[in-house]
Image (cartoon, rainbow, N blue to C red; front, side):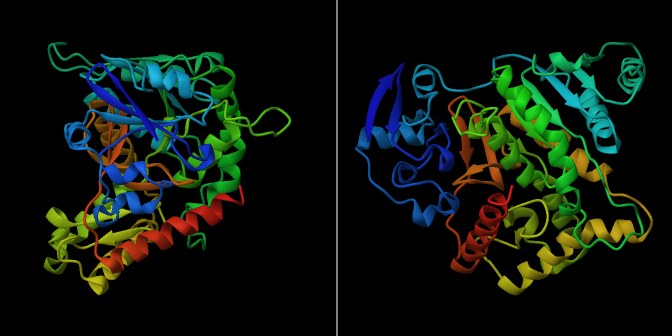
Amino acid sequence: MRSIMQNGNIVYLLEREPRLSKAGFHVSHPGQLLGEEGPHWLDANRLRAAVPPGEEALIEEGRARAVNMRHPAAERLVAQPSALPAGKKRVHIVALGDVGATLLLGLKLLGGDDISEIGVFDMRENIAERYEFEMNQISDPFCSAELPGVEPVAQEDLFRCDVFVFCASRGVPEVGTEVRDVRMAQLAGNIGILRLYARMARDTGFMGLFCVVSDPVDLLCQYAYMESNRTDTGDWDDRGLLPEQVRGYGLGVMHARAAYYAKKDARFLSYLTEGRMYGPHGQGIVAANSVPHYDDALSGELTALTLSANLRLREIGFKPYIAPAVSSGVLPILATLRGEWHYSAVALGGAYFGCKNRLTPNGAEIEALPLPEELYGHICESHAALIRQGKTL
C-alpha cells in the first residue's frame, strides 16, 4: 500500500478486486486499509490497525481517502474524488406511481435548500405533464419560499442530472393476495425495467448518484451496478457505474417502523437512542434494540415486528407507500445531499448493504461501532444471504 499527500489530505493507493471493493472511499478507520472490505467495517472492534501518528490524525480529522488502483477509473479518482458538485443539485425521478409521486411531493416541499430543479419522467401519457402542472402550483402564501421547480424530461435526457432516482415498479401484488414477501415478488419485473436505465447510465458516462427506491432495493442496486459494467456482449469491463455511485433507499422506513414500535412499547424504548438497523429492506434485516446494551431476544422481537409492518397495513386494506416514500426516500436522499448521517444501502464487500452512513467530499463514510458478538453474527448472516442472492442476478 502506498500513499500520497494531496492538498493537506492523504490518499491511500490500494490494490483490491474491483467487483468486491469501492473504487474510492472515505477512510474513517485504519483497519479499512487492510484486506478486503466487508461487514467487519461496521464493527469498530474488528478495525483495529496501526498507521503512523501523523496519518492517524488525518484519518480522525476526516482528511483521508482511498483509491482502488485496480479499477479503470483509478487515475481520475486519485486526481479528484467522485463527489457531487457544490451547490444545489438537479434531481431526476423516473416513474410517478404512488411512491414516485409521494417522493416528488416531499422533495418539492423540503428540498429548496438542496435541489435546483426536479425533472420527471413516466412512460404513461401525460403523467409527467400532470405533475409539472400541479407541483408548480404549490406555493407558500406570499411566494417567498424558494421551492425547486418541476419539469418533464425526455427519456434521452434522463442522465443530464446530478441525482437519478429510480421509482419504477411492475407487478406489485394487489392488496388481499397471499404474498408473504411483497418486495421479492417484484424482483423479476423491476429488473426488466431497470436494465434500460443501467445501460443508459453506462452509455452516457453518468457521474452522479444512481438511487434505487423500488423493491427489492438492495438486489436492484446490485443489478444496476452489474448491468452497467457489462459490454453489449455481456463481458465485464468495469466501465460503467462505480460501486459507490449506486445507493439504495429502503432501510429508512424499517428504522422508522422500529421507532414506531419503540414509542408504543417501553421494552423497545432504548432503540430510539441506542438502537441501529442493518441489512436489506426486507427479509434479512437486523434491528438492534441497543448496541451498548444489546438484548438478542428483544432485538429478534423488534426485528419481526418491523419486518411484518407492511403486511399489517395490507391486512387492513391499503398498500404501504407513504411512509416508505418519505422515510426511505425523501428524508434520506436529502440527508445524502447534505452530507448527513442516514440509513441507505451502500456497496460493501460485493453486496449493497443497508447501514448508517453519510456522503462526504471523500466518499461514503460507514458508521462503525463496537458491536456485540451476537449482533455482529446476525449482520454477517444477512450480508452473506445478499451475496448468495446477488449471484443469481
